[in-house]
Image 1 (cartoon, rainbow, N blue to C red):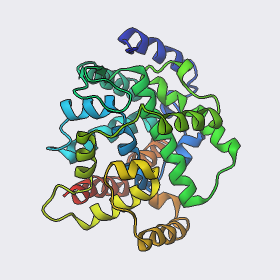
Image 2 (cartoon, helix red, strand yellow):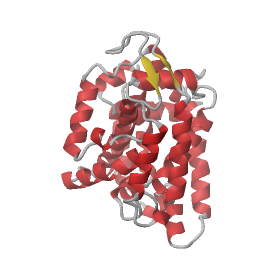
Image 3 (cartoon, rainbow, N blue to C red):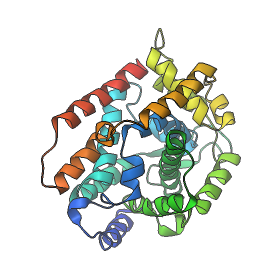
Length: 312
């Protein structure tokens, strides 16, 4: 187990700062593919996929199961997680660094033992939220899910776009202190890593991971909310089939798959400013010397409210 220390994080942040041209624009900025591909609300249809891929890693699942308030405060955890991520991706450099240090400090308190033999992990294996390999997997799931969603909404992306995106997003990985030696230098590198992980024994869905996954879609409620059923069906269609089965997801019916295609056609015609993630819109306003918009504030309230309606 290789744990990212505070010293290693600080060195990673210092190295990252040397590549930032305009601190107001943050670690990526408005010309980045990361803002373009991951800056609108459409990416949230991949939220379930990313969360379940992460839960399929026993280190991640046990850390969340033993230390998180996911079951008792799903909306609060959703808000805290995405506020940190948005600060890192869309915030000015100082905000990104503050969020990085805060997340590392929270992770430093999250450690323990995997209580059961699962996949390639023996019972008693130590886990730590700042484990470099676990952090690498979480980062990879976010990058991969963004591309999967974009290609569902917009069609196949040229390989040069995916190459540039995956390398760009290594700046985000630096905020967690992940060593460059663990990060991809091309889309092919990333895709090879994903195939290795998904096809190997490092991912395995434990009973607690399955329970948490179903809870995210409201399956623990007396009557599963309609939005929870839709989110579950979409996630099932986006996940590798064997993982969807391992989580016990209901297969997406034909009408959901057809509806996703119809949604993509309509969504592509909407004005970009209408569907921008609030943090993305506010970042562009900040760089232009304008304050946050009321539309962004309203959209953020609706977005966080959806978490309640999905999980029940």
